[in-house]
Image (tube, rainbow, N blue to C red; front, side, top):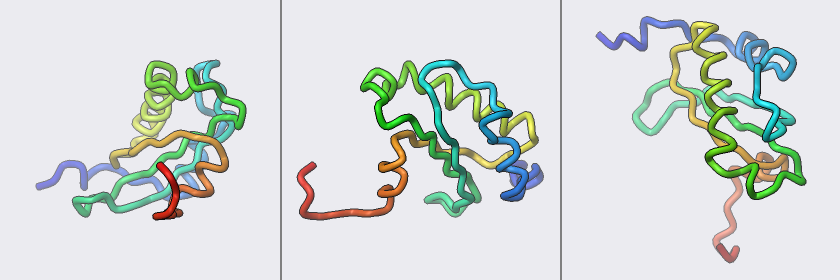
Length: 111
């Protein structure tokens, strides 16, 4: 029996409350301007969460480095655990423009 399936899956309203900016205990740096979560199915068919951490448009390259963003991800993951959420959370961070364009793909763009 899959033990993860026995755990609690918060609904979208409860997820919004848990991840509200005024409730999260995030580190002071890098500054986070928004946290958005979507309920998704991962590559293996498991219910999971996709969490996008929005940094300010003027965030430095340093703010995007793993050493800086990891504590933010850990704080969010802990808030989800404390609320009883059992689904795995996949994290991405970027600016608002990155969030808005996250599903767009231009094969002619120069990577």
